[in-house]
Each structure stands twice: as structure tokens, then as C-alpha cells.
Length: 293
Image 1 (cartoon, one colour):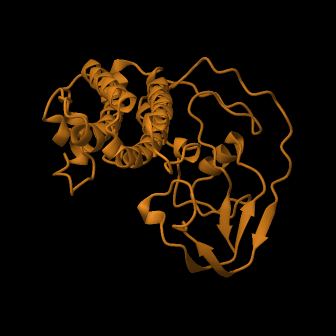
Image 2 (cartoon, rainbow, N blue to C red; image 1 turned 180 degrees about the vertical axis):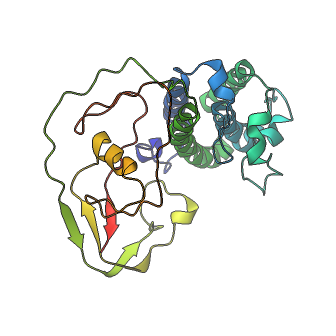
């Protein structure tokens, strides 16, 4: 759940700012917890152009608070390195020229330790700002914070995806975590489908509704939706493995078309814990399966 769903910005004041500071601290700590199982070498790898090194994720989400909150609203703030404003920009072209995404894995400096110092530097400055915020700018500060926290949570999801891809390239088959207990065995019921007819639906976020939404989600409008079916439960690791190993075929379970084999020969050993249990490590588990009729 986004921290913005728990906090409203209707009556911003100093007490309210401290509540947002606690939300900020929770989100920031969660990001570093996700990276705790990594070795320093893991932070540097960019396994394909669409994957960013974990080090870059850690720095980029910190850059957001520096560029859009600290520099405009904390007069005493001083950056650790002015070049970070270019290096850790992502796609904010209105702010400046972003560093090329495919080249992020080529940047060995700043080091991993430098990036963690950068995060700590920004966290201290954010704490200073939110403990004694300028009242005339507080509504705008909190609006930007309301955007920045879900932005970091989005990068937490990207971290999982990118770490999974990075480790998957290694023939030694390293695991993200090896301290997870296997899930208890239990029976999974037959996969059933809920059918939804075609028709016109209202989608998008209504500006009058409370709660956080990105700008591209705004503007509730009508949209024609084709008929579809949605599974009544999540997919298991075993079912997804079966689907991946099926190769160039249409799954008899999901009806989904595979464009080609999704596995390649690998050295080392793999452990899968049955079709109804979760495997240890990073787990890809769809919220639901969806197919067209």
C-alpha cells in the first residue's frame, strides 16, 4: 500500500509533516532491506539495456528527493557532487539531459559505499526539512513527497525484477536468499475462470476522488473492453514452470501462446518445490492469469 493512501494533504502542518517523515523513513528502509542480501559485485551489473544496476536504483530514487524537494526548499542543502544531478537522472528531460540508460552498468564510480553515503546524506537533509518545514511551502513539499514515495516503491519492484535477471545470467545459479523456509505443502484446487462480457467500462482516476494517482492515470473516461476471462486464484511456481518449459506451444492450462522456448541449458542445480509450493529466492507469481476469448 502506498504511504499516500494513509496520509492526506488536506491540512498540512508541522505535525502532519512529521507523519510524512515517518512514512518516508519506512519506505527508504524497505529499499535498503531489499538490497541487504546482495554482494557488492551484484550492485554493479547491468545484464541488459532494460535492466539497471541495483546501485543505480538506490541513487536515482535519492536523486528525486534532492532535485525536487531539497534543492528548492532547503536553503542550507549542499549536494555531495553536482554531477549526480546528471548521472542519476532517469527520464526527466524537462529537468535536464538524462545519462544514457544502456550505459549505467559502465559507471563504477561513485562506489556502492558512496551511493549509500549519498542516501544517508539525503535522509538527514529530509529529516531536517520535515522537522522544521517552511510553512509557506509545506503544501507543495508534501505534494512532491506524495509523488516521491510511490516512485521509490515502484523502484523497489524494479529492483526485484532486475536482481532476478542479473542473478539468472550466472551459471553458478546464485540465489537471492537462501534462508527462506519452504512453504507448507497444501492442495491447490482446479484452476477455474471467471468470464467477463465485452462492454463499455469507466476507467481512470477521477480527479474528485481522494487518494494518490499518477498524472497519466487521471481523467476518468469510457473505454470499450473486449470479453475476457480471469483465473480465480494466483498461479503457482510449478504451474508457471510447466508453462515456461512447454516451449513453442499453447499452454493447455492457460491458453497462452509461447513464442519459443523460455529456458536454456544451465550448469549447476535447481530446486523446485512442487507445483503447489513457493520456491525460495525471488519468486515470480502472477496475481492472476488473463486470456482473451
